[in-house]
Image (cartoon, rainbow over all chains, first blue to last red; front, side, top):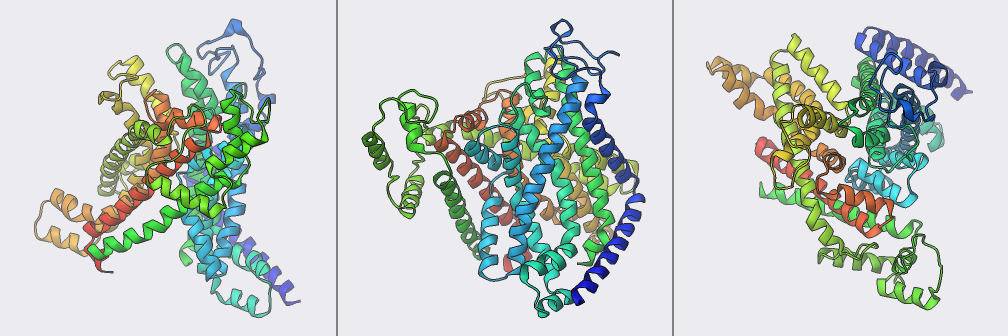
Length: 294
Length: 318
């Protein structure tokens, strides 16, 4: 009974929090622009088949390597494929890879970090040392180890990037959980005999969520950049796939004749990541009352 | 200072041991049988399956030769002893000692990453100070916009763009060059450094803004010191700590970035080698490269920590 009233109350609070956050967010024009660009880009990528008259995989050698024109706003590649179409299709892959990788990283990272923060003593000690060691590996190189074991391909790339994100999430989750752990409502929930996993999931994580949400948003951008790098090296998607990093790798042979092939996939990455970063920064500022309160 | 130095060194050793253990475990507990890999390689086969006339006896002999029949802790001990003696095993493909590969190629990558770090530090500090001194004005806005764009750009793409502009259209700098030619380092270092400078610029700005409000800065100004002197001598040194901390953390990113950027510019380094090793599942090579990258990264951060003692005497005694 008691836990029921409590959960109703906490939902009301969350709703009010949400409105406050939204109001803060609306006051920051850069965050709005970031969010709008991000939504438009995402929609454009999802709707790609309906937006463009071209098929991304159709080869038309006669119109190969054409510079940007009204017909092909971003030019065509060495097989005569429309580059704008390929970039839109590539966005789907980038978004899927980065979001799934972020979710993998967040799930395992938060699980590890929250456990470490909740159980001081040897559990914390063991997990913290593990995180320290993981953090010593630069993220792309850590992903490379995973790819060595699993092989290339889009799915393995997601896992590799996700694994590389685990230590970052874990460290942040541990810190925020420690700062929330000693609050009265957590002590109360524990005193009432709440099982530990339940206390962590229902009482601690919601109150430690703000910094994790901001971090997760920004990590999507980091994942897009890292995934582009790995794909550029040929450790991700296989050649006919319209992946941004892979497109940049393929463009290098034609760099003297076709500047547009080397330029626009990078612009797409940049615009996508800028919009994510600007939105994430705005979100951080909007959540600041909560972040600062700790 | 010596005490601080020693304490900091001692905390580094467990991390380095942990790093070695993690890499060791990754390769020994996860799927993929190195013995089969080596045997199929010796027979010239590509796929790691037992084909042709690999007998159980050959397999067992190879296992014993590699010490893989020993218990794991013993194997790890042997691995450590050998690693300390400079033996990291041999490449599955070609049988070259991994240490030789590293000695030949890693320095190029580390030098590129260091040059990138220098560019990032100078550019980041310059822009950060500029923004802090012009807080709220257009110059501030411009620098901070640059900072957002900078972190959102893949450094290898920036490298391609610099190549396109400076090497192919303006023809000022060479597109590819020998390792000894310093001019060939300019574009790759810029590509790496500009992306990394963005975060440092933001940090330097906020750190500088905070320091400029301190009493000792007011005192320095009240003494009648010239503004340039106040900023560069009094404020800069005190605002450096957070910037250096993050610069140390960024060194890992710079190492990863250098691996990709050197492929763009066709420079020598571990980039192409590690990529091939990953594709061919050449475990010893991947292991050696990653081990050294992680060690370099940990040592870079150790250096940063030690520099705190120089920047802020209070750190030495705490």
